[in-house]
Amino acid sequence: MADNKQRICIIGGGPAGLACGMYLEKKGYENYVIYEKLNKVGGKAYSPKIMVNGEERAYETGAIMGAITYHAVSEMEEFGGYYHKGPDFKPGEPNMRREYRNSFTGEVIEPFNVKAVPFKEKLKLIKLKAQFNKLQKLMATKYAGYDCYGHIGVASGKYDGISKIVKNESGDNAGEAFPNYIKGENENLKDLALTFKEFCKKNKIEEVQRIWIGPYTSFGYGYFDEIPAAYVLKYLDVTTAREFVGMRLWTWQDGTQEIYNSVNRKLKHPAVLNTEVVKIERPEGKVLVTIRQNGVETTEEFDKLIVTTPLDWFAGYADATKDEKELFAKIVHEKYVDFIARFDEDKGPVISGYLFENMEPERLGHAMVYYHRWEDQGKNCPCTVYALRNHTGDPDVSYEKTLEMMKEDIQKTLKFPIKEVLYAQESYYCPHVGPEDYAAGWYDKLEAIQGTKNTYYAGEILSFGDMEDTCAASKDIVGRFF
Ligand SMILES: Cc1cc2nc3c(=O)[nH]c(=O)nc-3n(C[C@H](O)[C@H](O)[C@H](O)COP(=O)(O)OP(=O)(O)OC[C@H]3O[C@@H](n4cnc5c(N)ncnc54)[C@H](O)[C@@H]3O)c2cc1C
Image (spheres, rainbow, N blue to C red):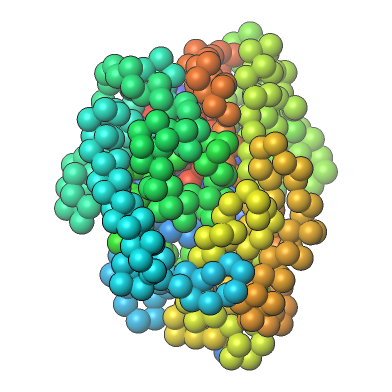
């Protein structure tokens, strides 16, 4: 048993940082501190309250949904005593209904309904179904082991980690499947370094991109011609993808942020807010952390450090080693823009909408999806609208231009007149490495330096930029190194 009296500093009070605190406590560590630079916990799980018809409710500007594969998030729910709604939603609960619209005309379409599409499209849909089944089989056989959280060994055809798959999508045995450590070798896993587009081409399953693009690109995770298949398939593993297609999703009544508020309230040491870590020095055997509170800087000594915040930023304020600098310089992230809009009285959408044509790189900066959270608010429900403004090889669309284009899509194409934008933001989103760096073993190089200078790396880059993968990565890091 490691020395659980060690003083541990955790940078970041988002899902990853709070999960580290929780899992450390579960292992008997009590001498930890979480520093959070903002005045709130939850990071990109942020659920502002908005008043509509005299009633205040939670809306989402960051994380929204989960699924039966959210095992680590379930453990956070259990710890905090705050649970999701769904997949069967009751009246008065936020829900996940959706429709599809043509991005150019705004008309409602049914691209996955064989009866509603023209003959040529029918054949494509039949092909899509067959390829979806083929992909399921491929992932269970040719790519066995793909479903581990994290990427250790994948570039050299190995797998080693917690398996997230559940055998039965209704989730009956979800509990017993987690944590299920699996380890092995499978040369085919090297294919996961290919872009998802190339991966599909290689396996002759190109049509499946039409399903994966909805919960992948429109959720801000990038385009299929730039993102290694590993990220796509580890986040949208076959079970999670099936749950998305079947609309068996989770959401949270008071917002996803409340998962982390409730965990924070139960921690022995809740996150220290309004406290930015601005400098890290790591002389032999210890970690000196300089924090800034109310403009005043102080330095504290710790035994160990867990970084859950962007590693490329970390290299900027820490005494980064040559290895850290080289590795972290390879990290790229998505620029995901969203805003919450209120509409003219009785003129807004009544259901969430997906705009598939706008999910292609040629339509960079256009609205890809909008989220209608409260069914009972009908046309007066404020909605969140989302777009990406970067794509490898193309110039970025500016933040201002992106907001302008998104508003135009909603107002002119879809004809929902916006009364006011209540909140707008751009997120540092989905940090990852490109196909070449992935194939060159970026993750194994990161694994090799875990623990050097008493420093451990967690957060989104470790596995994927969603709540489940980040919390599971924290579980894995605490489980293996503490
Ligand atoms: C628009 C949007 C939609 C999303 N939808 C979903 C979804 O439906 N489902 C899902 O599972 N996930 C979703 N996500 C992703 C999910 O929110 C993130 O993957 C998750 O929040 C990552 O957790 P994290 O702790 O690694 O990082 P973050 O959430 O980014 O938290 C990092 C924290 O560290 C703090 N910090 C940064 N630097 C410092 C410093 N120097 N000192 C102190 N504190 C610091 C930040 O203020 C922040 O609170 C969405 C995100 C966005 C933005």
